[in-house]
Amino acid sequence: MQRLSERQRDFGAALLDRTRPVPSGLVGPDGELSARRFSVYRNNVVMGLIETLKDAFPAVHRIVGTDFFRAMAAEYVVANPPLSPILLDYGADFADFVAEFEPSSVLPYLPDVARIERAWTEAYHAPEASPLEPEKLMSVESERLGEIRLVLHPSLGIVRSLLPALTIWRMNVGDGMPGPVDLEGGGEDTLIIRPAAEVEVRPMPPGAAEFATELAAGKSVTEAAKVAISHSEEFHLSANLIGLISAGAFVGWRFEDEPQLVNPWRPV
Image (cartoon, rainbow, N blue to C red):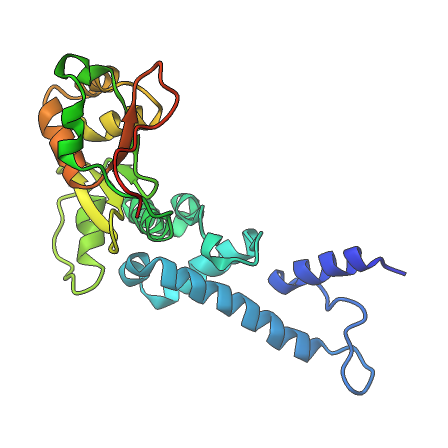
């Protein structure tokens, strides 16, 4: 006799794999094996997960169309069953799957569009935090400003792309209108953040993504700026600090010898 854990494992595997037989022990009112009932249930589960992905990646769905999206999502569902009953977590690696999905290779920007959409979802559900007000940094001595470690907002996400993924995403969400895009025109880095009630999606100037990434790793302003400049001679420290502060990208700061965040304002 199978153990309960083995039955549950077989049942879960059969739900997403049509080549597997109906799990033993599933019978209808007549006491006979009920393949038809299980098939209906299996179809409902798969379609439910496909709909979850469609809702989470509306731009990807709009770009490829319903039939293509369902076929692609169905393969993802079979290969990547949910690991949690919280469907908010589902699809976290969908963009990586899209990047390896051979039929979508004719749309090289599609994985990065999916990454923007996933970052949007994560930003929307991130913890609340009060953005740093510009005047609060005035308490830092000017000669020590380069030493501070800025702490990034918990909703902040960055998507780097060698293609105009942000432009394409904007064309395919809300009231956006698809139009011609020059895929040879260079890449776009995207900032996704929810400083208040709404998620904001912004383009990042040259070097800004490297700068913010280094700050997120705990580097000082000076250290992060050096890395940004090494990637782009167009990087301007003051302009980037002002831009990130205005976007609500920071929640506080600390010095290297101070382990605690300086949080000089009332929390949300």
